[in-house]
Length: 347
Image (cartoon, rainbow, N blue to C red):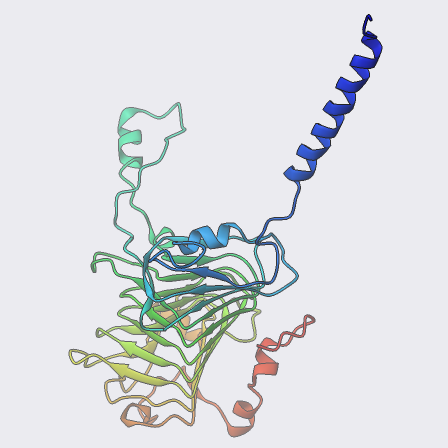
């Protein structure tokens, strides 16, 4: 019996339609990691991933749930970015001192790039192509997303002392760092975006020069700040219209054995804001406390202290352009006052 070509065509089209629907559904199927379950990272292969970067990559954009990336003890040599489209992520280490994210870039590493000016002569091209990496590309970890939390981790830039070398570079808002260590030399922590809010809670931060710097609003609660050279702890560049910059509350300043003269800070830009209150300051803090960086910044720098203790807390020789807060002024500086905005963030 002769087969009907119309029926054969119909069967073929039906199968093709079913196959295409199956493929389409698979294409847009939810990722197995698109849920609030914890992801485990372990260098020894006992987790779902061996690198933190792989775990970050599987997180869904703009998550409306809390996602934990749990990182087992180990040393992770990775240069990481948490991109702008990720939020509500917590990266939690198994052990603060034994869970280490490290990299070794510094600002004076040669940086090659494609030169695009077709009208430039050879000398211009040669000079341009001798550029170095620059401070802002040296990070070990860069956080661009909002609502990110780090716990029980060490973030390290272990480059040689050959230039600025950032361990943590932040651009996101509502960031929390709890029981973390930040290790480096010059420019260890760069709080890189104006008006963003950061909380450092019971953290350890070390460095040499300007090792906490930038324009963000950041509260440091019961942190240990360790100076490794005769230099400056902070270099705030707070915008003029930002009410608060860096606030160190109940922190302890410590120094390496070779340190004899340490400034609390200097203003990287006009209107830099830094406050130390209820902190313990060692004798190596310079009597004047602060440096102007440029003489004219004495007119705009917002440098304050209140109720500090220790041999370095004496105020009789402080610069005339810094100020001791009154008790009423200090009592008004609270988490709520510093962080409160329309989003009602309570870190």
